[in-house]
Length: 328
Image 1 (tube, rainbow, N blue to C red):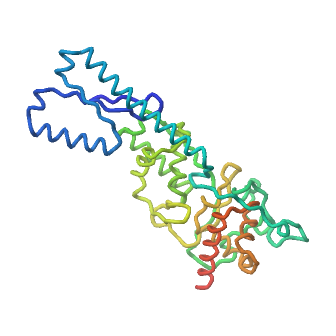
Image 2: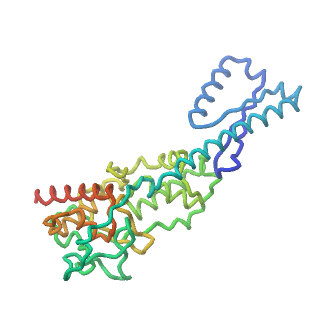
Image 3: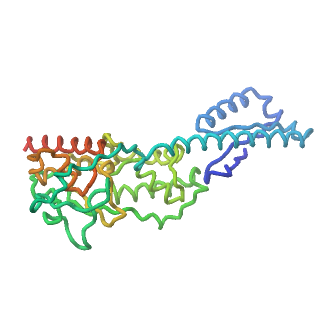
């Protein structure tokens, strides 16, 4: 009957208070219905506290104290769990929700500039690929990455474009209404906007975009669950770095690599779908002739230090590119 807002977490509730009367519960059907409702609410993560009207009427002060004590205990337990979770996360370095392995520097001989390199390296920060081109410039051989269509005869490869972050400032966001039924239209519109602008992209990256738009620095399970309700209409591809969301009917084996629109739009290798990475290899087949194709691909993308988990993902892209080339 009453929702108690959590004092520490915007948009979250500490508990639900149900006010029950003796007359109402004289019916067996009502009691059964209440039990089912409580089970459903607890299954959704709610803490339920009951207040009996008889107690409230005859012992208002005592009933109030017991209610306050119950809520205080729930708050203390919630804060304890939050503190434990923060301590656990502080010991691990995370990159967009994925644990980052220690990165090995490139071999000295690979960093030496002996003459003109076969693939001019694009300077960027470690683990962020492909620094943006100048405004109006298109990906080309001189930029270090060729458009996949330039060397590919596959008509399944869509036209590439720029990857830019979705501007969600135009939406009227309300953290307090995030979990309310009436807010579902706003959430769905935000999901559609991100997928339209950035898809294919990982579902956890999508959730982070929407969480940040609401002012939240963390994306908890409840936020993810609420957003996931609006993802059923999209296609998915399950990859080693996570689940990628695509607009319905657009999943392909090769997808033209999308250069970042600006520095903020640079992605880590884990954030780029295999279809894009494989398209870069198909567009630059001589990568396959190198002694270390994954390392050469990383340098082409502008990655200066290659983590083990990123190397594994680039190997996946190379395998897909080889299969694609062998079938043509």
